[in-house]
Image 1 (tube, rainbow, N blue to C red):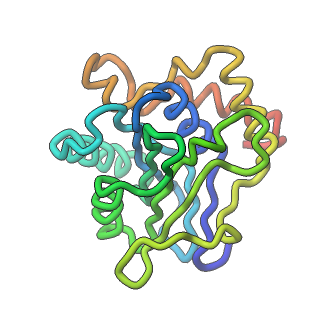
Image 2 (cartoon, helix red, strand yellow):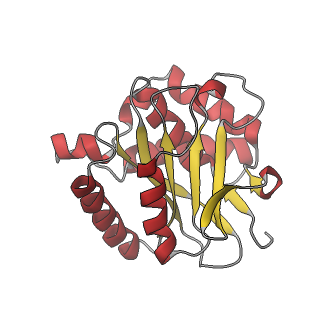
Length: 207
């Protein structure tokens, strides 16, 4: 991968999509993670779904960021970005809350990305990923050139997401909000991750 390129894994994309689909009338957000070392390119390997209510509530966001940061350091991962889907499907522009959290992540990761989910393109069979990505350029968040964003095996990824829906597995997704309501729920989503990885293996011939 070259300088400035971003690769989004099937696992990260599937979980973001399930999160936005699980709460279609709410704004949702989460953190983008990478298990590859810091370098010129960003490989987003996983994500942590955070909230589906009170996105701008700073104390909850701070608590989530701290806990995810600790977990990342224990699992050799790092926070490389932020994602958000707005409640209004026709609006995929970053909110002040999105910019604020992305800014916080940028302080720790100088090639952090801000990813907005485009609700209007979130339908089965969509030929392009329903995402809009921003990068930090000249002290502001600017739209990223879509030729630098890679989602390999897009058709297989869509097929995996459809399989998760048809088997009702979107209900396995736990965000940090749900964990705060019931602390026995696992916000690291190990169960769902295993399920997705199981579907990825035959699709790609490798994990």
